[in-house]
Image (cartoon, rainbow, N blue to C red; front, side, top):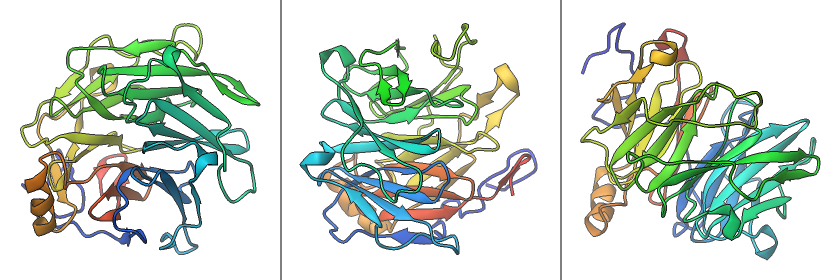
Length: 341
């Protein structure tokens, strides 16, 4: 595959090993890294380790790289973490919020006050219980551009639930979804991501080996009326997708990056068209191998849904992916308004 002006690609090897600029390991290799997220400033990288009910937070150093050991963590009974699977951040006035999706059926929200070094140690709010309709909640994201709503994947019911913020101080979210997105293209959603403008929503369909992309409906009088659909603008049914786990849009060009839990690479899909007519390429314009092929094959032979990259997070200068086998790898992102540099 060759790059040209109409098909911009990542400056990483395609079909070979991409050169990560940094790797972050965990002290205990048995910890399963499933979810990852950058803070709004990009100066904190959070990683969820599901089996050990912990969220680790790494700080960025003055030179741009992250510290190799976590600066803080959330764990223990006070944190109320129960198989944390995904993480999302948002700004809230002078403070930051961190939401954690827990497979048991809860979203816990933590706050970091301005000037304080860490989130927690206890959540300031929790969405849970029968009225929440959370069923195997594997993914979470704040809805941009205002971040006043939380969107959550329900793998068991193949729905996306939206919870509006009811108060900023104290932090409160509705316990009952204001809207639930359902469509036949959505099957066992494992991860979701929004474009920076909030117009586009991508859903990784673990059970269908596809990705569905929906457009936000025109605003209905207020930000609290957040709805997407009713049908996708694009369904990526690329045969090379293998148990897609997480999705993320690049901030400037809306390229869509998809991790494959059952393959040793993440894939990049290009937006085509403008405005309401935007669609995404059905085939990837780039693939980047994440780990050692021998390690992947050994794990994948035991379980076809494992071995590949899981969580993904994108900031202005980096793509961070995580997996139980390789911890965290960060790849350089070079992007401009005309595509990839």
